[in-house]
Each structure stands twice: as C-alpha cells, then as structure tokens.
Length: 608
Image (cartoon, rainbow, N blue to C red; front, side, top):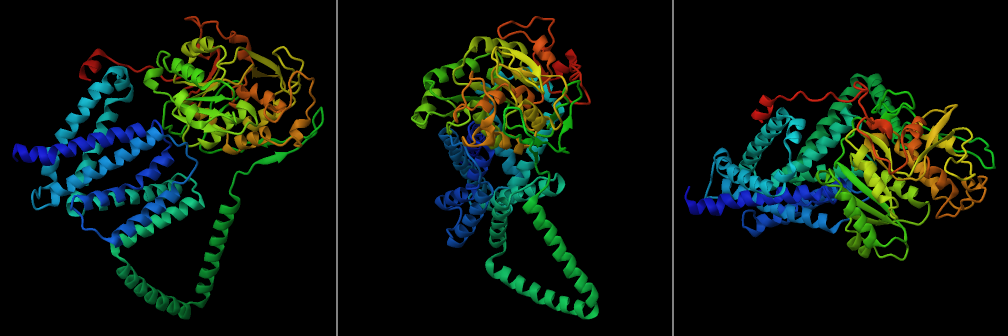
C-alpha cells in the first residue's frame, strides 16, 4: 500500500463517510422521520447513478426500472403529513449523495482489478481514517457541550455495546459489497425496513394503514424481481401453480370433507380480518346529556390502553405512555396571529439561551393564523425550524391540538406551547429555570392557577362566567367521571408537557376536541349560557376559553392542591421547595419517589 494509493482510495472513503454521517444526523433536527425515510428511499437510485458515472456499474434500463419500483413503493409507505424545511431537505439530499459515493468507492476498492482488496484488509485500512475524521469533527462541534455526567448517565456498557454492534455491521457491510455490489447493499436496507415493519406488527401489535401495506408490498415485489429476474419468477410460478393444483385436486379426492372445512375456515379468517380493518377496536363511546344553559353534551370516554402504565398518586391517577421513544429532547411550539414575526423570532432566541437549553438543542415550530401573512417571510424572520399556516378557527388551543395530532409519532420528549404575544416572558423564563427537569410531566406557565367545583365551575380568575364543559373535558381525558370536589384550572394555556403524558390519552380524544373548537356557528357547542365577558366567535369560541383554562385537567394534572402550593408567576422557588410544588412529575410506578441517584466513585470516573 503506497502513499499515493492510500490517499486516492482510502482517504476519500473516510471523508465521504464522515460527511454522510454529519448530514444524516443534522437532518433529524429539521425534518420528520417519515419525510426522512421517504428521501432515504432514493439512495438506491443515487448509488446506481454514481456507479454508472464512475464506470463501476454497467448501465441497464431494466435495473433502473426495478429500483424505481422499489423507490415508489417505499415513498407510498412513508407518505404522511410533512412539515417541509428547506435546510433539512438540503442536508438529507447532500447526505444521500455522500453516502452513494462512499459505497461506490468501497465497492471499487473491493472488486476492481486495480485494487481487489480483501474485505477485512480494506476495513483495516479505511476504518482508522473514518474514526480520525469523526473525532476531529467531534472535537470542534460536540466536545465543548459533552460533559462527563452525560457519559456516566448513559453508561459505559451501553457505549461499548453500540461500538461492538457498529463494528460488526461494518464487517458485514464490506463482505456484502465484496460478494455482490453497493446497490445490493442499499436494496437490503429497504428489505430491512419491510422486515422491521412486519416484526413490529406481529410482535408488538403496531398498526399499519392500507396505504403503508400497499407501498411495502410494491417495494417487496421490486426486490424479488431485481433479485431473481422476471423470467425466473415466471418459471417458478408456473411450476408452483402446476404442483399446487395437482396436490389440491388429489387432496380433494382423498379427503372431500377436510377440503370443504379448509375452504370455510379460510373464508372465515378473511372475513374476520376484513372486519377488523374496517371497524378496528377501542372505538370512542359518546353519550349526550342536557346541560344548564341549553345544548347537549358530548363526552368521550377513554378505554384502557394496554401499552400505557398508570402512575400512582392521590389525584388524579395519570396514564403515561412509558414505551414511547421520542426522536428529540425538546420542541418549542408557538401560535401567532397578528404578532410581528421578527419579535417572535427574538423571543424564541431568548428562550433558547436559557441555562440548560443549549444542550437540549430545541426544535422550534411556528403555527400562524394571519391569512395575509406570507409563509416564507414568517419562516425567515422567526428563524423557526418549521412554519405552518393554519385556519383562524379555534384560537391557540386548536393550534396545540393540531400539533399533537399531526406530530403524534414525532413528539419530542418535552414540548413547550407558547402564545405569540409572549406576555410575562421574563417570569415564564424564571418558572422554567426553577422547575423544569427530566421528570417534568406538566408545568403550567400561566400567571396563576385556580380551583373550581368540577360540577359547577365558576371562573376563579375574576370573571362571573361559568365553565359548563369542565366535567366533560375531565371525563374525556381522564376516563372517569368528574370528582365531587374541586379541580385545577390555569389562567392561560401556556405550558410544558411531556410526550408520555400527551400520549397517555388516545389520539382520537384530541381529534374530538379540535372538532368542537373549529365547529361551525350552528353547532350545539355554541349554545352555552354566557354572561358577556367573553365573545363566542369562530376565531375565539367560548368553548375555547373553557378549554384554554383546562389544559391541566387535559394532561391529567388536575389536583387542586397545586392552586394552593404554587405561587403566582414571578415568585421564585426557594431551595427547600420541592419540584412538584408547581407541576406534576412523570415517575415510573415502580419508583414513585423518582430514580435513585447513581452511585459514582472516583475510581469509576478515573476509568472513564
């Protein structure tokens, strides 16, 4: 191995590997996972085109057609609601190109007559280059923000296990490329996704839509055609068809009764599966009762969800989704109407500069309701990661519900919901600094908390209005009737909530509430008795005012004792004050007092 060959064949592999890894990881800060998977589906085409350009692969229209079918299938399966972000799109596109060059260079190193290197020997040469370049990038961008506490919290065993798996994966990759090609490697990645989806359905009970099933079927068909060829598939199909027909006829002649039973059983199984797809399980049970002030009620009762766990506590008993794995640490969601985008962007930057927020790398999403605002201008001036235009109906609560519904499988570990006016921003920052932590379940950022009788809720914040819908909101989100005593209300709808607590309530409950908030003016929800302090416009419905004050109830943090223990916004937490003085905490039912502190010795630190 001469120096010239090393720099021509080895160093570029390390460079492209490093660039691909950086661009691929940066993409997760800007795009949803569904959109990222859609873009990754084009990797086989990128590998094919780069291979043709570098004369590593022989151009073939048939192969291009097969790969295009696979890409189409994965794109159909990954289809969904996507918050487009140009920066993330560029990162992912460039990352795919870098990955294609890396795979082609590895293939040339292993298979070309110029090098013809053994897979393990090639890994011996280019692995140190990849490690060195990644280490240099780490020193510049990540080392200043990575503390020893993060390493200890994660655990050395976890890090070593990840490193061992990555090394094994690299060995298998170079052997696969050496025996086949880089294109086959990328196609196996598509097959891996299909197998993961199938495993999640049969083992963990995940649900997939008919669109996803059709898309993955198309992708799997393209893989089979690419691997075997259309002619061989037709030959095998004809042989199987003939053998199967003969065997079925012979079985019918020998055992006519069993044949009829088999046909009936198969028909019954298909019928049961069809009914399951059409009607599903866990439907919403809706009952209507008359209310004071006219109109009728619409209470959504929550069924038990086997994938969640109930947290022990006096009031209420929240249901937490302990199995959800969030893709990000923190999201900041803002709803703006007439506020100036530049002012919103400045407020967002101020929030991201709060102590401890830098390492969270918060993702910012802005929903704006001004029909005359330009989306590109709002995006450029707020500098948000994603910007989305919504209708004006329902106020900020409708925007929060839209974010929860549309980002259900993309929710961050914690999400902060803020109004675009950013009133009391300095006091909210103090409350966040004093109380927010990894165990935060629901932390209100409202000016104050109050309490009212659940079955006769008079507004505790200075008006004479009555919130008739509080019992229904409580029943919808908590799965049981309203208690005989008081419940907790917040003066405004600004808060930090965990994904565990959001997903503890089924998604269709949020959809039902959004439907009520954005309903037409002839809907019965607008018939509640009003005393005139609040209006009942479609853009600012009276029910929206009740729901805005009920977010603590909605996220199963309705204990009225918080109204007594938590001071008004602006009063600082003292050293002796407990963390749950102003919030509800998410704690594993097995450890209701929280996780035990890690036992770390100086010898352990020296080893690290």
